[in-house]
Each structure stands twice: as C-alpha cells, then as structure tokens.
Image (cartoon, rainbow over all chains, first blue to last red):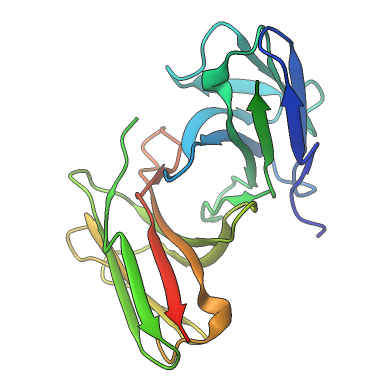
Length: 116
Length: 112
C-alpha cells in the first residue's frame, strides 16, 4: 500500500493556459474522488468515479473542468482556459466499496495550482 | 458549497494540555471522519466512526459519533508539538451521495 499519489505537487500557470493533474489511487481502490480546497477552507467535492464511470459532478465543476479515469486506475483532472479563481489545492482521494466494507477516503498530498 | 460547523476555529494551548473540538451539522451522517492537515499537504485520516454513539480511540486521540448522527467531537490528550496543524471533521451520508462534506477546520497552535 503506497498511498494515493498526485502529480505534479505544484503548478504555476498563466491565465488562459490549460493544465492537467494526475492522481494514482491506492491499488485496488475502486472509488476515486477529486476535491478542491481554497485557503482557509475545508476541501469541497468536485467529482467521483467508481471504476471508470464518473458518477457525480459538483456544480463547482464548470465546463472548463474535465476528469477521466479511462481504465479504472489513475485519473486525470484537466482545467482549460485557467482563470485566477482556479488557484487552489486540488486533492485526490480513494476508497474501496463493497459488501461489508465501510467507506473511508484516503487523500493524496494534493496539487497546488497558482494561476497568474 | 456546504461546510459543517466546526469549533473552535482556532486554539492556542501549551504543550501537555488536553484539546477538545466538535463538529455539528443540520443533516444526518452515517459516517464521521476526522483528518489532520499540515501546511501544503493533503488531509491525513485520524479516526473513522461508523455508528451512532460510537467512541473510538487512536493513541492520544478519542472521537465520538453523536447519538443524533448530527455531531461528532475529537479530543486530544496531553498535546505534543507534532499535534500542531488543522483538524477537519467530515461527514458521509451513504445515501447514494458519496461525497465527503467537510467542516471549516480547527487550527491548533502550541505555545512554547
């Protein structure tokens, strides 16, 4: 169990550029979540996958945001035409879902995005 | 988005003191989780609670799942310098809605 990993850890970009983040969940975890955290706040849910299926998207996830989990393992979160308001910590979490298994989400170290 | 009410917002204590913080919600949750977050890092799970009334310990940490399922508290006994950080509660409803709803956080500072 190597934990949830995220790449990159930090990203600085200019307004209008596209950025993509990657998350590798704990192996065999079938659920993967994306959250966004701004300074002084708790994380807020963006979207989640069960295997490769994206099952829920928050209203926070504008049309400029897209997330994929093509093979049910790692996931990517892309932000197109970044805006300064997109500056935040983007957190990935994973969990396992099954009969008799209680839900617990484990977080990665996050990707801190700064849009200039 | 919705965030749970967590108090106190910040605490300044001396090493060795006990700490207590709580989290309340207007909605029922079936799971309560407590996380600690250090600057620039992701939240680290401390304690998970799955049943109303449940009291669970993890070393010097003790957490309880409120009987109404709308609140939870976390106690830290005999604080040490590495306890410094931000503590978050998070609730999960499990009613087909799998997202965690987080509290606003409690920042713990230890005064030398």
